Image 1 (spheres, rainbow, N blue to C red):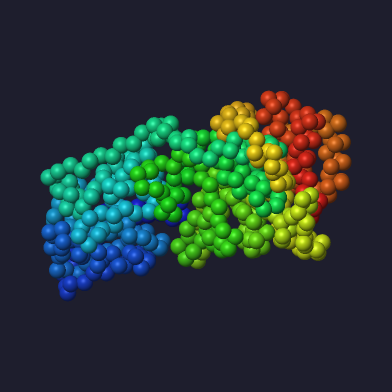
Image 2 (cartoon, one colour):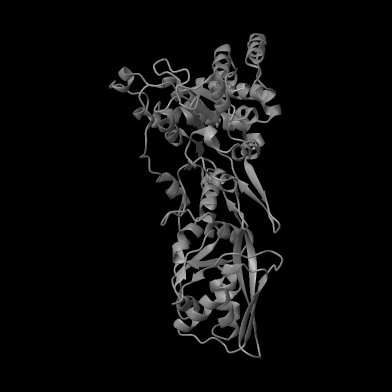
Length: 509
């Protein structure tokens, strides 16, 4: 007897269909799995055997062969347990095989027949909709996540025997329904607020510009000046996630196994802050079975690198590709996988080893050579890709103890959202949504300068020894500042402020 069960798997952050073929043949009892299975898939035969017996079914005393097609793609994970078990039961006549027609099945089996959640339910549901399957059967814990995708009927199951009763027509499994719009509207506004930061008004201004244009930001200052505190408040002033953005963020979190329980859709922008000991694969992604790294987990959010010079130089250099292209390509012998990585890079660093170079109140203990060596750990090409560079001095006591506070995150967010709407209208024909994404052609088109502006920028380029890439960054920042001011054209004030955010290039060259 032969039975076929449609299932799904994930490669990178994309789901793809897998056909589970089960053949029961005469001969000595055996259980073989083919189709490039990994260790977890090969071990599924023991979980399936125990789950069938403990759920009240008999394992056929035949030669069982399981094929996972396409056979030239390596299969990994435990999500094939349920389709393999159903294939065996369908081939043995426990229910009509046509009951599985057009239905994709995914789930891990416990030894007692209970269904456990799997990674990547959302990308699998997207793939089910793309393949025009009539339904998707998943463990109950994965059902809300899978139901976020419209056009797919999601069946939630808790045990193997419930699934068999449903397919045999003896009972109905519940249909999971989720309203994505309601999830996005229910975003929790609580969290750190920008008005909790005393002083540092010029840094808050830089954060506002960075959020409005999607620009990368570097903060340089002594320990305790508030760099980390400011960075953690950046997500609170970014525009809310759209549904398409939330779907992409949730897919990455689902594949990485980081989607919180009872959270079918991530509705807040991610904030990732890896330690400086992170490996290249941990930051970019990789492994024998490629998994998303920190840059992908920060997709549509913020990647914060504290103590930037302490990261390994090779690790920092691998950031160049995602900063330019918005994606990461991981190549392995078995496959080449693309991970999304469109994030805002926010970095913080001390000006020297002791942290007090240039501080008017604390004496620096570093020699000039040590200062230069420490600062040179951040390469020029990487520095060129950071749009705004701002100094964060120590906060005076009077500002720390003052009762007054600046605008709240919600107030700043309204300014940012207004500027983003202007940019979206301007860049919509190209499918872009912020100034940082503009190509060279678009930058020339939308960042025109008059004669005075050109002269000012030429002088700045010569004195600061800026690169051609830094030239483009200045124009984009000036365009964002003009958008925040509601100006149609870039003025001298906008350009002067933008040039001021490249003042560290001389010291960090």
